[in-house]
Image (cartoon, rainbow, N blue to C red; front, side, top):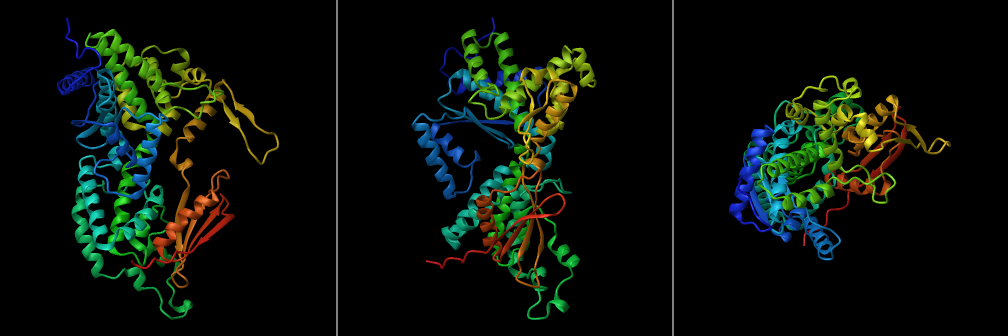
Amino acid sequence: MTERLFEGADWDFRTLQRITDACEEVATKDLGLDVYPNQIEVITAEQMLDAYSSVGMPLFYKHWSFGKHFAFHEASYRKGLMGLAYEIVINSSPCISYLMEENTATMQTLVIAHAAFGHNHFFKNNYLFKQWTDADGILDYLDFAKNYVMTCEERYGRVEVERTLDAAHALMSHGIDRYPGKKKLDLRAEEKRAGRRRQHEEEVFNDLWRTVPKGASKTRSALSIERRRKLLGLPQENLLYFLEKSAPRLAPWQRELLRIVRHIAQYFYPQSQTKVMNEGTATYVHYRIMTKLHQQGRISDGNFLEFLQSHTNVVFQPEFDDPRFSGFNPYALGFAVMQDIERIVTRPEDEDREWFPDIAGKNDVMGVLRDVWANYRDESFIAQFLSPKLMRHFRMFHLHDDPEERAGIRVDAIHDDRGFRRVRRELARQHDVGFIDANIEVVDVDLSGDRRLILHHHVIKGSQLNETDAKRVLQHLADLWTYDVSLIEVDANDKVLREYVVSPRPIPAAA
């Protein structure tokens, strides 16, 4: 008889080791997963709350906003208004999984299967993470960032450092490169170059600002538009990169802080594009592993029922007319599509053969899934693999609501061939960062005049910026630029819809 991994709810560290070894055996031999080395750490509820406040990153630098988030989450948790995640997993090598010490042995098994093998495999193999993250260097870089921020606070004052970080955090979502460059990010090399870079920047003038005219007429001295834009690298959608390189009055240490925030924003970029796939993969993997362990007799019927209750809660999807409905649960949608792929590969129907000729009846479930996990992101994953059967299961339809039309709201995609394709296309678009994120870029700088920074927001389908939020974020941008900033919203025909102009706030005098 196969020996049980544990009995009841209690566990110790030797139990965790047995659980990890058993999960690894199923993950590698049965599922063919390829993972980073695992590092598992057990933390308290308070430490989990602390991880929440610093966006789940270890060794993070200190900032007042993290403390604010900690106080909010702690109060909500103590009042019973929120629960805590069973785990947090870090995309690094080794892959770090934080487990709550309050978890039962069953839940520890579940989260090890989910995080240490499901998420771990996805982090290591998905093309976006390969392009944009440096799993080997992130922990060392976070340690460097934490120490650098502390050094800056000691040298330049906490208020000045927090003022720069406040502005950088406000612009964080616009501090990423969306297209892969020629070089893969190497955070260890970045850390080593930081000192040399700061020394060099302190010794040389910025060539761009050396060419700015002083007192001469604009006609004779102004740079040509082409030359100016070339020197500035315009147009530029990475606002933090542009400020780091071109803001005229930033000190070298401030530029390094912008660089740190920019690298951390880039680290999170793949995660924002793969929420459905990442959680769907981890959920599918934990379901397969837990089911196999139960079949092998390594966990009891009671423990398996405990797992099924938790798993069911994780993949719960309210109906569209349920008061709790707020969109599609990424765990539920991702897991459902993974299971549907398994069905199409092993038990296809005629409809599946028509819609998915490349995988229908292939009979290699894990081969197909590993290929999907490696080569797609949420948008393309949904556009390629959401089946009519699953759309019927979720009772999906599409509502057309155009405020410029008087016809009101109407259902314009139902359960027919044309409707299925429309629904799939629209749902995929809702996960396309190019569609849902504001397209804002720096287009010019008035070097020969008042040095105003000019940005354009390219409005898609009439989705303009919230005025209050736009002005607040632009204020941070103007504070870093130290001159006026103009943001112009334009439609597809370059028609100006709205313009914001913000001036920098005066730098407060040192205490």
